[in-house]
Length: 148
Image (cartoon, rainbow, N blue to C red; front, side, top):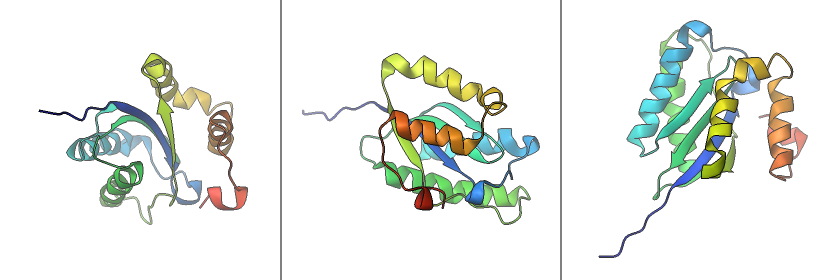
């Protein structure tokens, strides 16, 4: 019987709307756990995740039968609702996102990068970090629209 097999790793990054620092340390762990749970229901395995006050880094697998857009949309919606249930008024995610492919040989590097988010952001803000990713992956972008 024929099989269709795939293992695609993605580093997905997106911010809170207008990059507002709404995720407190008190809810971070619970919100991350919920993200992992929702991703799993969609067939995505989480390798690493870190939710900063104003953005998220998620290293995960892309399910073989899913598009990136479908996965991100169907994680953002319930996770936004859950964060609101945790008492964060007016919470929402930015409309867009960045999704970057990760080679199996680079998994540990990306995992460590995500784990060290607080340290990275003592040196530079989210927008600087995100621009670096876009430039590294040679993705053209318009400053006017990338920060929705």
